[in-house]
Image (cartoon, rainbow over all chains, first blue to last red; front, side, top):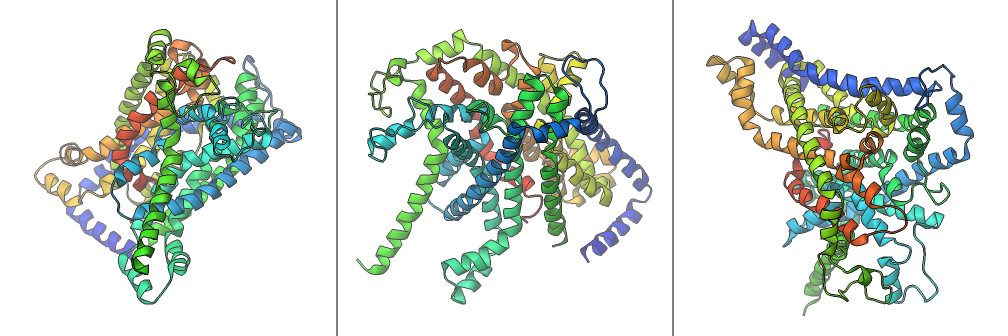
Length: 312
Length: 282
C-alpha cells in the first residue's frame, strides 16, 4: 500500500522534474560510486583473497602457492586445539549474550524511570562500550591479578573466602573462561541496554494504560505486552552482541593469550596465532573462515528485521 | 506510616539498588584505574594494605614515567593523526553516498544501502590475514598509512548507513524549493542539505573516531615498531612486557585514553542507536 503511494508521488515528481531525472540518477551513482569502489577493494577483495588463501598453501615468506583443496579445513578439524577454540567461541558468544540479554532487560526497565542524576548514571554505564576494549581488558587484568586481585581481597575481607581460598582467576581453565565471559558481558551490556531502552521508549503509552486498566499485573504485563513488543529490537541487540563476541580476539589476546593451555582459545585468536605469529597464512585464513557461516546467518536475520520494519 | 507508603519506599529502594549495582559493575574498572594511577608502587604491592585506601600519600610518579619514559605521548599523537585522516576520508566518501541512497538511487539504492551496511558485519578477524600480505605488497607494513588506508573499510559502511537515515529525515520540499530557485541538485545538497545536517556529520565524526581508537587487530598485524603504535595496541603489547607489570603507569595509560572520548560519545549515543536498530524503532 505504502509502496504504491510512494510510487504515485514519485510519478508526480518525475513529471515535475522532467528532464532532471536522467541526470539525477547519473549523479546518484556518481556520488555513491567512490564508496562502493572503496568497499569492494578493501572488504570484497580481501575477503575473496581469504577464500583463496584457505585452499592454498601460502605462508608469510612464500612467493609461490599451490592449490591444496580442502586440506587446511581438514587439518583444522583434526586439530584438538581448533576443536577447543570452536567450542569456546560458541560458549563465549552464547553464554555472554544470554546473560547480557537478561541484565540489559532489567537495567533498561530501571532506566526507563526518571530519577535525579540519570545522565551521570547513563554516562558511567556507557563507559565500557566506548572505551577501547583492549584497554578495558587491561583494567580487568589488574582486577583479576593472581596476587593483588581486588575481588579476592574483598571477598576475603567480608568473609566469603576463607583463609585458604584464593582463586587464580586467569590461571585455572574454568575460572579463566568465567573471567572472559565477565569481560564480554561488561563490554556488551551498555550497547544492549541502550538499544532495548530505545525499543521500550517507542512503545506508545496508551498500550500500557490499556493493560493497566484491564488489570494486568507486573509479570503478565512484562511477558504479554512489553517483551512481545520489543521482540524485534531485542533480536537486533542480540545479533549485534553475537557478532561482536563471536569475532572478538582482543579480550582473549590481552587477558589470557588463549591460555592456560589453549583452554580459552577462540577461533579469532587461534587464527591470529597460527596465521600471523606462526606465519601459516593459509591455515590461519581457513580457521578464520569458520566464523563466516554464523556471521552470514546473523546478517540474514538482521535483513529480515529490517524488511519487516520497512513493511510495518 | 501506612503500608502503601512502605511499599512505595521499598520499590524506590529496590530501584536505587538495581541502578547502583549496575553502575558499579560498569564503572568500577575505571575507578580502579584512577585509584591505581595515583598510588605508590610499594603501596600497590603490599598485600597487607587495604587496597581501597591510600596507605602512602598519592603520587604523580606513574604519570611522569608514562609521559617521559615511554612512548605513550607518541601513541596518543599517532592515534589522533590516524583518526583525523580516517574521519576525513570517511566524510568524503560516506556523505555523498548517504545522500545518494536517501534521495537519488530509488528502490535499488535502498537494497544497496542494506548491502553496504551488512559489510560492517565482516570483521577484521576474517580480513587481517589477506590484509597482512596486501599491506606488505604495497610496502606499507609498519607504517601508519596502512591504518589510514584500511580503517575506512569499517567506518564507511556504518557511516553511510547513519547518514542515509539523517538525510531521509530532512524534508524534500526544502531542496526542491532551492532547485526551483535555480540551484542544481548537487548545489542544493551542498548549500541546503549539508548546513542542516551538522549534527549528523558530527555524529559520524565522533563515531568514526571512536572506532579508530578501539581498533586493535589490524594495528597489531601491520605495525611492529614501537613508535608507530596506536594507543589501543601500544599499551597492551608494549607496556605489558614480561612478568613485571608497572600497574600504576599502565592504569594511567588506560584511563587517559578511555574516559575523555566516552564523555563526548555520550552526547551522541541516541543517534548511533538509531543506526544500530536498522529502522526497527520508529
